[in-house]
Length: 165
Image 1: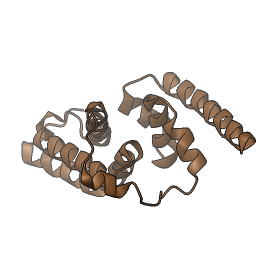
Image 2 (image 1 turned 90 degrees about the vertical axis):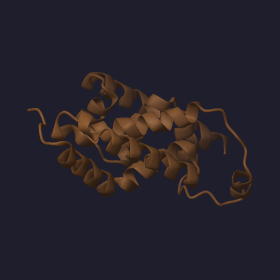
Image 3 (image 1 turned 60 degrees about the horizontal axis):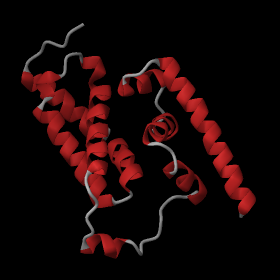
């Protein structure tokens, strides 16, 4: 069913979803960039683009998938930019890491971005595999196999790390 209401209604729907899921988008961005300011900028840029292009949303039931894709595009665009060192960045390097399990955080960081994304969406954002497949625009079976393969990689990495500790 196509979502045929006017631009204002679409914009309102997008704004409401952005507000209700802001923390989820922020956590996702932060898990990739490990910097609060950059994660905030990514989410703000994504929100701006989503509201600006809300009239391109075709089906109301897919608004969350549509927003996640926008946020992921923003995250990956940010990561492709050449790194620039700033005074704020240097000051932040002395901050304590907020991860409860540093071994898990390191293991997650060692994964390919697509594999890490599947783990994050499934276990940290509590999404169903069908939702993840829609966000990534992949077959459900591909997402399932990537999830199980990545879990195996994580398990091996964590066991290797604990054996060397």
